[in-house]
Length: 555
Image (tube, rainbow, N blue to C red; front, side, top):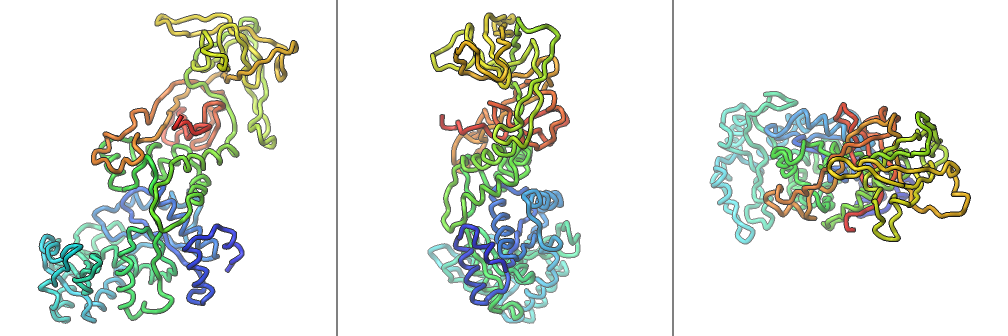
């Protein structure tokens, strides 16, 4: 146990519990698990849980299992299984041993259920769903016992076996725990442990026609695997009572070192929805292009947008772990990726909205190779070549015929600016297209200003970027913004009414020739524009904007 390593991390209530359990001898090691249901793609909220479970186990030289809680075959698909495995690996984590499934333990679960029936602690109930709701009571009124609650044990065993053998229709009966219909906790009012389902299962095919409920399977999966600390979100806090009740009433697992459940606050992020159901609706209603749309909070969407595993792990560390629900400023996530890419992203130039600039006193047909740093703060990354010639592309937003004020530092007529990593130029006249829009700016340059200020002492404050015309490469740029305009979009029944109409804007521009070989997901800083990466779903040259150089949302 590397306690020294574990103490380097910021403490939280979970670490305090673990430290106490280890020092008291309750546990000799730390074993956690990440237990997703394979019914959708992982999102940034799951990343918080992944970082917590894998990170905590690693810090204590323990291990973390990846276990799919695959107890609902109607909603589960192999596609989701594979995407989840890929996302966990992408985040930088390795699970212990082979991937595990709750379905691996179906036979064991069945034997545990029979043990509870044998002890008079579970029974087969034939109430309809509507009847069960009536019998359940309310938050202010206790429930009533099912008329099937006192069925003799032998008969219950026979009925449960018949359920297993397909002798009942779906919805005809369930196996319920016999706990307390007057409990103040609704989840303890004889919860359902098994139901009849004839759906084919992605792991067990048609071997089973009864499936355990999540609350029954989850605690048993933890116990079978020797999990010491079962970490889940606050929504399962009340359900901890079922977790404990089941394990306490099974001979094999009623031990001091059995698993215990501890709850932490789930991630609530501004301008985002975290509900799988609502994310599914966005996809089904074609409000986004798919689960991996770069505006989605899914890990596949964030990855496609250019978020790095390091930035997401950093975000999880920044927000920390607590037992109090709160809403996190999305700016914290954006700061994490911005801080990461500022250090690692090579610099290059792209013009997203090009107009032509012609330097009239520069020789025709001459092409000059200049050098610029790959990273201005990291000399070890070396230099890159940039091309310079008579005709350049600059961004339309970097030119105005007349300066609006004395603070304007971009190019205007009769004013000088520096071309980034190149010469000082002066705009002299413009040419417009048939619509009256400026298409070409004619300039002159000062050949003595490469890498130095004008010799006569005149000050040039503005700097704009460019791409040489003849070797430029056409590219598409997708400028992403927050998907929703409202910081709490989850309150809208109709999510379409909360969509930000400017959440994606597409521009056609140019990049330096070296960017033709840009690898998908590789981060670049387009100087003065922001951080971009090549799209991992397009065969064309498409760049997705990850984040701006600074937070301008509230400006």
